[in-house]
Amino acid sequence: MAARPWVTPKEVREYSEVASVQSRSDARLRVDISRAEQYVITYTHNDFSDVEPLPEPVKTAVLILAENYAHNAAIISRELKSETLDEYSYTAENSTIEVSDLDLGALLDGFVKPIAKSGITFRLRKL
Image (cartoon, rainbow, N blue to C red):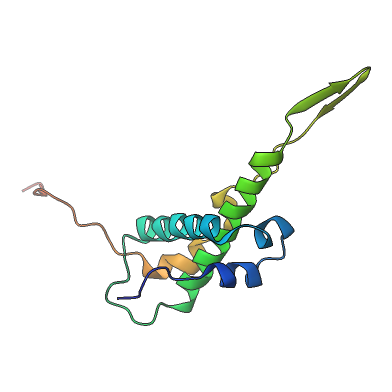
């Protein structure tokens, strides 16, 4: 089995060019990595217990997701929704990145395991 965590906080920092991700604590990055790993496991229905070492596309997907989670957490924690100063008003746009925008399917679709169906399937045909 590929030992978890699949990536380290140091690897996420080295991959990222975002200052808020690079300055994030190891404890918080470990949580982001754990969330990214769980997303990959859920998406693929595959815990990669039968693979050693972890395939590079899966590791890349975890790096991208962990960076995304860290970036979004930093944005949300400091983002102002609106502010009014005398006659001047300011409203900030939501600049978080959605997971669906990361195009992880190209990296992970080859590792998706089919879900076993429970129950019985009947097929009827005309005689």
